[in-house]
Length: 294
Image 1 (cartoon, helix red, strand yellow):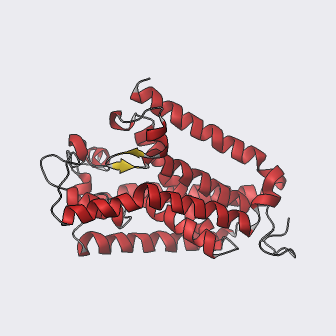
Image 2 (cartoon, one colour):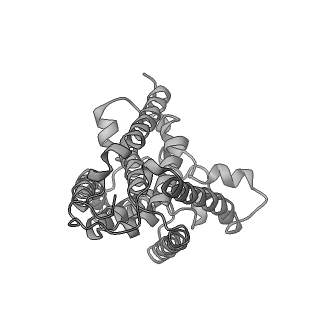
């Protein structure tokens, strides 16, 4: 099977899984409403991420800083150090929101913080699935356990993390009440904090790539492994009449609109669709077995 066919198949299977997840939710929400369920699920996902990706990223950066310079496929300009630092500092949207979501699902029974992180995580996961995985992931996509569950160097866990991010985000939205304006406000705050964070990392630690377009190198051709263009290069080419940093605002506005739409859909589903409604009132049961009243 070609990389393109494998990528399309994986994305289709991802949406089939999410469809099943949504379809069975009304019948299992007493289980998924429990704090214990989310502690177990988020702990497994976080441990998996650390073991299958983050530990490797830290080791790779440590080796690089000690003179062990492996070939990660960068051409023309050596962005290897920036690439490895970006992975360790989680400057890409998806791993940042994925890790934060897992941490807050473990730490907070109400899922109030996780629900404001869910829509950006869903958006980022969908963006990668549609613009990279479905197109064959640069020829790397394949229907094998190695690619699906671990990925390949230098992109460890590329498919499975975005699969988990989408599933986790959808699960949080299905199982957490929506407070339209509160959720909207704090999602904006969370995104602002994220952009302040990556700006500090990008300019404070000299990270040039994989920083959500904050640095101009994220918009240039041939800055990624094996001579491929940077993530935002196609957008920059379309809007070539704009110079950096004004280019940043085009994708930012589009992302903002899509994430806002996701938040609105969450509100509509929770408030208008009886089978999916989770009451914003605390259950009398112990939080381990059911936080919200159903």
